Image 1 (cartoon, rainbow, N blue to C red):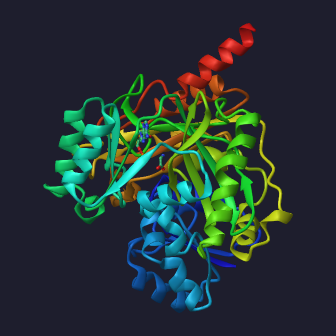
Image 2: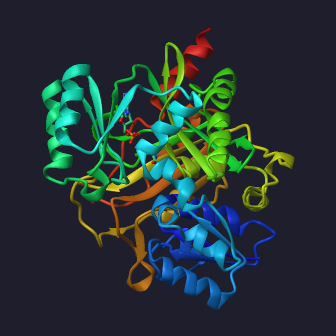
Length: 432
Ligand code: AMP
Ligand code: GLY
């Protein structure tokens, strides 16, 4: 098959690296890709949101299958457009991508189908939103309804903070059209966890568990980011919790979406709060997490491509995926300043030394591009995902940092404590 992967981050590098190894894939393209992806795929300079450009390329190259990485082209209807010209694709239609594209849509779906989530209100008027905050009191969470690149959520400790967040979104337009409508919801208490399942419209197959670290600095401090590292398995997601999440959240969502005439196909990524009353849904994403995808695919033993195609074809229930027992851990190296302003174009050295010749270490590229004479240049906020596999999370962590320390990039930084919670759980289990 001739395959096109859409996107150019670490997630898409992991997807390309995995798909390139499939015996079913005889030609792999990536749009737009990055310097690391260029080793596994032919990169074509078409932006992930350029739907017309992507369609023209798919027709010109007679692509057989398209795998969409990021949410933006899904919400823009790339899969619908491909389906309309008879090209199969992995990912939800625009109508199903509303699960990520509109937080209000998802909350209403939860209310209608009895899916556990925080109590909420939807608002298009600032005054009504403020009255709701005054009535509910703090802590309270204010969210832009639409896609806001992970920046649209304020967990407000005080009423004043919540009122300011309402003004920022509605009066100042901080999130553009995405903030014209707000969801305001109760603050949930517990430990956060992520959950991923492949879905074919009817049937959901859980993937290996994984957890990311969203804050920029050690100790889970500092501003929110796309994710500074991840590990798999995630010990917080015990087998019992996986089953409870499937029963109370994932299966009712898949059934509800089908009943609403918006069958969901693709990866359903649930952000959960594990509360005293059980798992509650914080939000849905309609794609693989980045960098969770990197650790999950590192552990995948089966061929990914037939599983993705089974989602598109609605035959996933006949499928089973096999995983390596080992743990995987990714340390993200980001440009200094991220998630605020940062420099681009700095030179990254030591990539080959970091990877060594071990199958258990892989340096996935996120924001990179090729420079002169084969150099690799930083070209984004999150730049690399140094990934290692080992018998335990603690050993994978040690291996990943040994590799990361071989990278020569003074303009970059990484957290030094990725996986800390899981490492502590391993230690506690060893003592028991
Ligand atoms: P989201 O983009 O919806 O995942 O929100 C970003 C972050 O805000 C989450 O990862 C949580 O840490 C936090 N958050 C969102 N909603 C809630 C909530 N209802 N209660 C507590 N924390 C929340
Ligand atoms: N790692 C979080 C995300 O992909 O949204």
